[in-house]
Length: 524
Image (cartoon, rainbow, N blue to C red; front, side, top):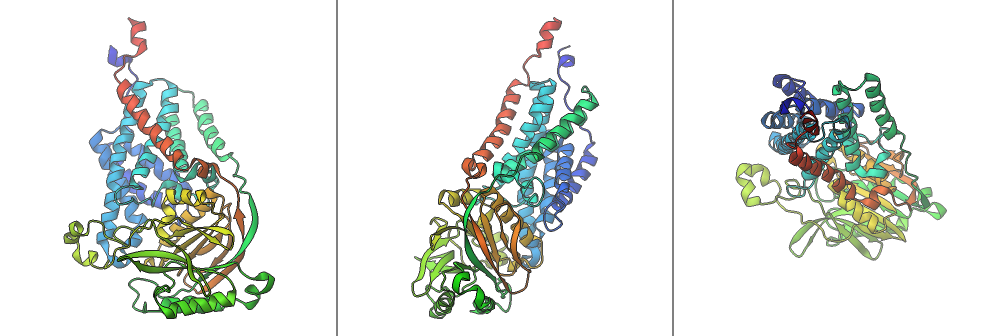
């Protein structure tokens, strides 16, 4: 009698064999929503496929389904890691991320099981289930973005929406908040489909109304005050680690040659540039130690009568750093920033003695370990506060917060994509950079050694760009941001809030799942 009066458990809409196939198919569908295909609606379809496959499962099969969905997604999404290094790091990274998807799948399945028991009414199923499922999805993204070794934030579902109608939400909610909204919407639509005890017209209005409500949120008014004239140069030199032409001074010479093509009319008089930005690793050897590199920078800085923001590798106190320098003629490096988020197993090997026996030939390719920096990531360039991001830094939410707290008016994102060739990696990174511009309300200069290089406005539109894999330059009057967006004001609090809601809701549902249904007392 008691069991019959309880809210029924959600039945698995798919047998396990079909759920496995759906999970395997969900990965490529999800990836198609990201650049370079950029079919952003497919991200929502992929999320729905994952949730449908996990609904009504037991813990073991939920882990299997989640793991397979994550594996199929990351094997496609980060296939660029295998371009030069082969399958071992590619499969290892995809499998690690997929294991987190498996654990996250268990939590989501438990939410589908426990929440309707704890709150058996329509409000529980249509109101709380989507919120808790969305929160648990973001919780999984938070964990993978921070652990182990600083995490891997690549592939968050919101990162597929840089040019979709959902992109303006980033200024309000940040990347994690947009991920939450996306999963919440999909979970709500799924729950309305299964709510057989609610009239179809009501379900349709509820689902359509939720989508319309989200899309009706206006763009944040990204106010600016004044401009700074920036030249950004893509040398297209042999900057790849495995490029046989990457000889001393080769990348520097390519940058110098491309910079000299900037017309004189754009570097003198009233049209003089205020700063020149070069990519990550664009000046080698280190100009603070090599006179020839320093002389080349000095000559250009004098010609432009402007500081140069350049990337190099520095060696100080027995440690290597991936460094951005603010260089002025006759003064040298007047400020510098060391990359705070070097890539594990790419720029350094954590716990080298432990990992080396598994793949000694690959581990030994990384012959020097870059040390994470500790300096602030904002330069004062002639009175303009410029936030500095070096390559993988762009995915770190905390570093964007640090920039905004440092008063950044514009963001300079320096990167080197040469080791990934003509793969999706550079477009994926550019999409993240575009979201960062919207999120912060700041123009962003994404400058790469080989592409994709663009100057992006605070609302996300492209001001100027250089064709990939060609030497070239951009010169533009870049607006200086003055606004404080809700996303940067609340910072990571949004991520903690929605992830916490998911975890807290699951815990409360677990504790209340055996609570007697009040209808039992009325029946008795």
